[in-house]
Length: 249
Image 1 (cartoon, rainbow, N blue to C red):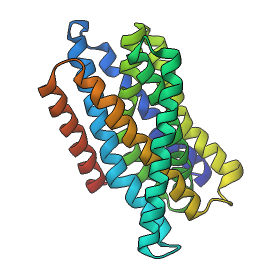
Image 2 (image 1 turned 90 degrees about the vertical axis):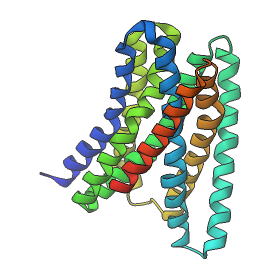
Image 3 (image 1 turned 135 degrees about the vertical axis):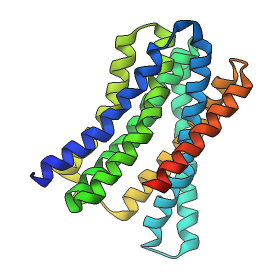
Image 4 (image 1 turned 45 degrees about the horizontal axis):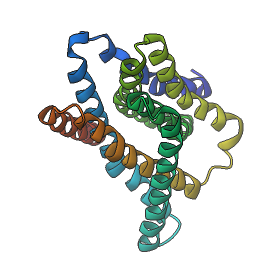
C-alpha cells in the first residue's frame, strides 16, 4: 500500500476512535449521575497522565536535542505555563456564553482543548507513519486508546447538558476530525518545515492546557455530584490505565 494512503489511514483510525466516547451516553438514564461522575473523573485521570508522562517528557526530549538539559526544562515549564494561561482564557471566554450550563461549557472547552491537542498529534502520526510504517501504526494505536476517554470528556457533558445525541456525536466527530486535519496540513504544508522546537512548543502548551482542564474543570465537576468515592476510583483508574498503555505500547 502507498505510504501516503497508509499514513492517512492510521491517522484517521487514531482520530475517529474519539467517537467511541459517545457510548456511555447510551447507558441507562437512571444512572445519569454515576455516568457523569465516572466519565469526568476518568477523563481527568487520563488527561493528567498523558500530560505528565507523555507530552511533557516528549517536549523535554525534543528540546534537549537542541540545547542542555536545564534550559530545556525551563523552556518546557514556560510552555506549560503559557498553556495553562491560555486555557484560563478559554475558560473565561466560554464561561461568559455558557455560564448557566456548566456541563455544556465543559464540553465546549474539551472540544477546543482536544482540537489543539489532536492537530499536532495528527501531524506527528502522519509523519511517523510516512517515515516508519511500524512506528506509525504503533503510535496510532496508542493515540486511539487515549482518544476514547477524551471523546467521553466531550460527548457525556454535551449529551447530558442538551439531551441531544446528534449534537454529542457531531461535537465528538469534530474533535476526532482535527487529527485528520493535522495529517492534511502535514501533507500539504508542514512536513518540510516542522522543527523539533515547534513540536516541543506545541506539546508543552497542550500539556499545560490538559493539566488545567483536568484539575480545574473535569475533576471539580465530577466532585460536584457528591459521589466522592466513585470520583477517586475513576480518576485513579484513568490515570493508571493511561500509564499502563504508555508502558505497554
